[in-house]
Length: 171
Ligand code: HEC
Ligand code: HEC
Image (cartoon, rainbow, N blue to C red; front, side, top):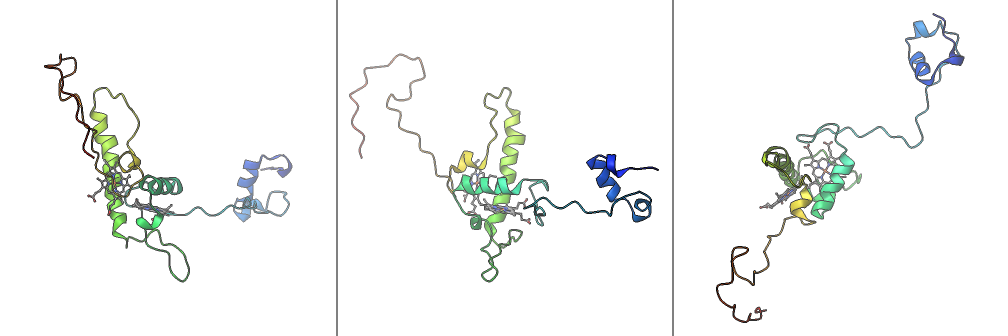
C-alpha cells in the first residue's frame, strides 16, 4: 500500500490518521496531528431523560418554542437552578408541570397525526402547535364568541320581520 499523504484528500487523510498504529506506521507520514476542534465548538448536549420527544430533537428550538407559546420561562416546567452552582437540571422530573407538558406533547401529536389526518380534504395543512391553543398563556383562556346581533337565521333566509332597533349592549 503506497499512500502519499501529500496528495490525499482531507477525508482520506482523516481516515489515514485514524488507522490503527500498526498500519499507520507504514505510511510515510509526518507525525499525525489530531484535527483541532473548530473554535467555539462544544460537545452537543446529550439528553438523559426524554420520554416523548425523539432523541435527535433540536431541544434548543423546541424548548424555546414551548416557552414562547405559553409565555413562560423554562422554570415553569423545569426545576429552579441549583442555588449554589446555578446550574439547571433540565433532566429532573421534580416539577410536576413537566409531566403535564409531556401529556400535552402527546396530545398535540395525536391531534396532528391521528385526527386531522382523518379529514377527507384538509384545507389548512398547518400543524397544530402549543401556541394554537395557548396563544402566549399558561392556561388557554376560554373563547367567548362575540354576540350575533342578527339572531340565528340560517344564512340566506329572508328576515321574518323588521328587527327592532338594537338596544345598546349593557356595559
Ligand atoms: C411547557 C413546558 C416546558 C418549558 C417551558 C420548557 N421545557 Fe424543557 N422540557 C420539557 C419537557 C416535557 C421535557 C422532556 C421531554 C421528554 O420527556 O421527551 C423537557 C426536556 C428538556 C431538556 C432535556 C433534558 C434531558 O436531559 O432529558 C432540556 C435541556 C430542556 N428541556 C431545556 C429547556 C430550556 C432551556 C427551556 C427554556 C428555554 C425549557 N426547557 C422550557 C418541558 C418544557
Ligand atoms: C388543543 C389545545 C391545546 C394544545 C394544542 C396544547 N395545550 Fe397545553 N393546555 C391546554 C389546556 C386547555 C390546558 C389547561 C388544562 C387544565 O389545567 O385544565 C393546558 C395546560 C397546559 C399546561 C399546564 C399544566 C399545569 O400543570 O399547569 C402546560 C405545561 C401545557 N399545557 C403545555 C403545552 C405544550 C408544551 C403544548 C404543545 C406541545 C400544549 N400545551 C398544547 C390546551 C392545549
